[in-house]
Image 1 (cartoon, one colour):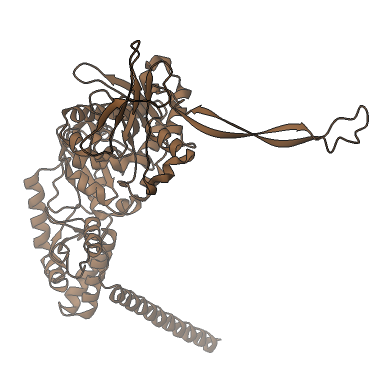
Image 2: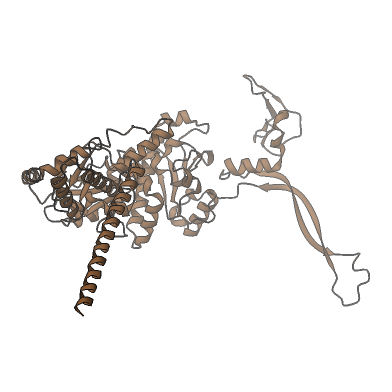
Length: 556
């Protein structure tokens, strides 16, 4: 390093070091520096010669020093192509004829400034146009074809100085479409005094805000900041809280927009991140919950929020009801939901495994408890609990034979059988005990166990012992009752009928058939029995018709 002070008569000094623990300072006799300044001379190792290439230097400067205040220029060679007259072709040019041209390269050398972009986060927000915000987002985050859905520009002053711009992308970034927490995703770019430091500090925002893009420029962190320093830094904690708060403000602004399609687009792209926020961020959970969206039994193809659910609740309703399933269509056909919708209550549909984990962290909302309708012991708000128990005891007593027969026929498949008058259209439903896992979660846990090298065989056995709730007023159950009375409890037809009843209840309740071959065989037996019966009826009818025709002929 050669330097010369701006003081008159100051000597030109040379500072030398080989990166060890020592250095030397002496007067320099090399080419004098004009005026004052500093000249840095780097001696590269043999395996680092790539840093002599202009392209490599430009890449480093664009990456780390794009927004440094002082101009940084690189000596480089530029080639331009110019049109000049073609002397050879113009030898025989006639008078008045336009001369022929040729293209020739012209090479020049000189310094070219690399850091020409201006850090717009340092300007007052009132001076930055929407077009400038968009252009900065597209260039800084390599998102040429994406327009941000929202942005916020703010600064921290006082104990900590920091300036920042945050964006909500218009579409899910490509790397997050493969893995919602992709480790290589670079969402927040950290600068210290306009020098780029890193874009992979995980703790600068919580994991559930992985989709947010932005820049943070701190004046309080050291330039040689490391991950360890950041983790212990009080500055980072304060910045983290402010980034979360500003991100939530942006999301609420989108939610409050007159154009409802904007929030629907946001939810379809990033809703799963808010669900993770409810699970992992207890400090901000209460601010995230109102932003959640669900399908419901009354919303059709539109989303509904918990606030909208509460507004539409029936008088004296004290609970918010929900059911879990693999998709909206399966949730709608779930017999457990039928118990609620038949009485005019609205049911929220939770259609992803993540929903069930998330809802465990939302026990109540605005003093209303959240109740899973697919769990045993459901108490409705329009009915006294003691009265409900009395009704069910009477039903279990009146249909004791069917109940005991089903428990014997389905031993090992269900933990018990209950009679209920809550079902209106379905003959039966499978429900879990209070602490049981839904079928959706069971499949998820099985997949996780297999993925980790385990086996799914028998893993969920205890959880599959669901409770079978039976509607005694349904024609199918009445037919079963007649079979039991006529054939006794050992009749094969009644047993097959009972297992088929269980299989149908399992399918409509979201469970998987354990033995699909056995299920298919029972269906075929039932179809064959029906077809044989129809053929016999047809034969009898034909005989009767022939005899009638013969009698008419004799009379004639």
